[in-house]
Length: 261
Image (cartoon, rainbow, N blue to C red; front, side, top):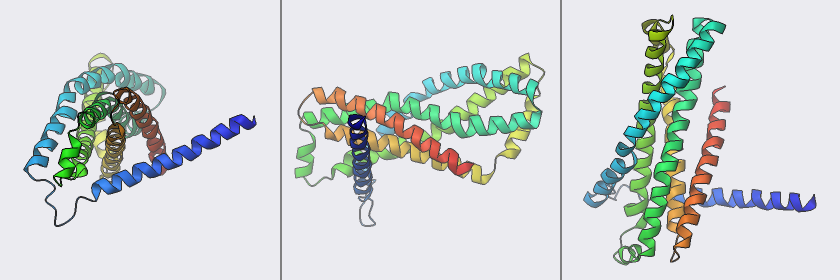
């Protein structure tokens, strides 16, 4: 029993120091955005566009496919079950809270973790292993300016945009599928759903996805830059980054659930 509590204590201490390291890494990276710096110069601007294509645009196909399947398989079944158990007002409230607030950001975050987080770790790890970072540092180019900030910015933008897109497509596909097969008014339900969406709800949704994007981007860049000269570290850091991203997404989502109760 003492061994278990000693192990648990070490894990908690390691977690605290890990969070401190992540926060310091993020603050140091964002600190390059100073008034006298032209962060979005041509080189960085092109990297941001390249990362937006890799992280966001290339993920639209899988996001669309998954949203359609989730809408038909989950949203329509939820509508059918809740419509038979509760009134229409309760159904709309459940859809607004469960699908809009929870499933959209979480599933989008999971896709970006599994698809883009590992790619960023491998990309930065291989770049460091091949010795491409040190010459840039000797030339006075900030690693955060050139490698970290473009990926953080692209991850946040992709998370927010894809979460909105995924949620809208999932709800629309589920509602229209339910209207086609069940006794369900799509127009009335969508009108009531839109009337329940407030500015505060939209801002909370955006804040949640910005936070998710920062978590994924920060952890991915942090573990990618930890890789030194060993190729074994690439797979090791990639696994750590993916697992810790998923854990922190669940923790952050729990915080937002408590915050919005």
